[in-house]
Length: 435
Image (cartoon, rainbow, N blue to C red; front, side, top):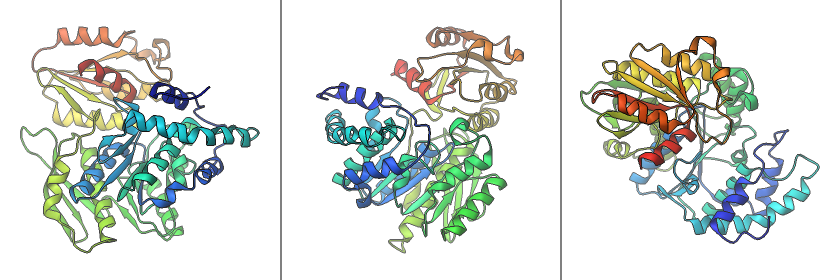
């Protein structure tokens, strides 16, 4: 590729990089950062990994810190509307000009690394290039805190060259098995790779097998460990006609009563509690006083596109990026507890490398759900009709999701519900249709 002279060419350069390398290593990313002057060493960071909940925890934590007057950078993936969202300052994505400038700055280094690592798996991957751009941007703009989401896993993720103030593990479940391993233990070991010496660790709800692995790693690193339902607690409360969740939260001598969040689902209470604990541990490092009476106001501001996002009130149309079995189990619980009196249509599109048969089974358990399958313009292949278990042969499947959407909307009554789900990429594509 020749000279990069505009935003479109910058994106082409980024997306033109290879996605994965055969042998995982941090050597290439460490060398990348070294050639850029190790920009990550100038930043105060919170590192976030987990199978599900990374984006929501990042959003809650961002808004808690913003509420206290801090400048907060975030590094997230994937994007919902525009690539630039991945690098944001105080909730605002960087400009097209910034993306172009960052690509122009890292391009010569990428060229050098392509030569250096030619015989060692190749030069930087797409995610490594984006991560380097992010470090470079924030080293120049110096937020008070930078929340860094892992891309996949932990141990060999490009972000794992950092020394954070706090490490967060939101959840551990079966996803990305082709990269992280085929057992829960292997996946947990990988995510535990972000735990650093003497750096506090905050964890969401974990299965006992996973918890044991996280405990062992934390102890070996002399890292204080805070576990949901052991060290901090949340009790859900039911409020009629409130779109969102209400709960009481407790950690040490901190108590927050009737906390309210706009995002729906019991897992969002857990996500908000993880963020609250990370926030409190972080502020305890700086100041003994924490303004608990203000935190509810900060939490209520948090929205995160594509997470049980209400698009239309009547009939109710909701988008959710649930893209793996644990996330779909969470969606199933939400539908069962909050929407069991409605007739629900679910439009589902899932990538081929996910547990799509098991995700379908989770939704088919619900008696008030009518499931319709479809495909979309995905970055990787979606499942095909012939790959479905024989027992799903009678489920309708549309080649074009927009045709399925129109058919469903035309058949719906005013008090019915339509949930569009299965992939954040799918949700991103459908969301543009409504916007």
